[in-house]
Amino acid sequence: MDGFGGGALNEGLLEQGVVAAARALRRSTGAQIGGFTASHGIIESRHDGILSAQADQRPAPFEIVLETPHHAPMRRQGHAFLFGLHAILAEYRQLECTTKT
Image (cartoon, rainbow, N blue to C red; front, side, top):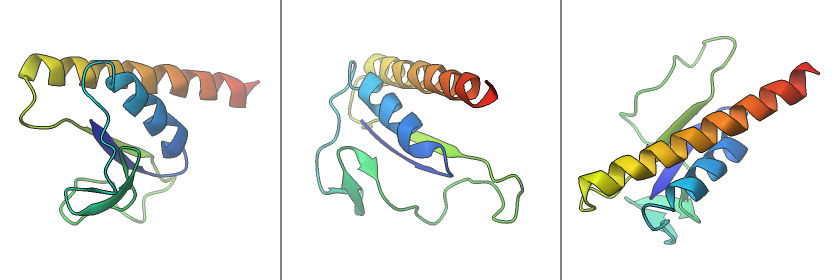
């Protein structure tokens, strides 16, 4: 299980997502994932071809991608994604509540 993201909010959100997803699939630990530099399951650079917002879009969105190993059973991939997504949304809601008060 690994992921990467872009934008100002991604670090905390992505970390929460990868931690939660690891309940279903082991977190990647290598220094490289798919040929890209990584640390603790988080890919540190973007790669060409990824779908993303236009560079000049304002306000700049944040982007998060959770990746599951293709060889893992589909059911576990689905659980990992849902665990990660739920954690990301919960953390985002918490950030929104904190910034609005």
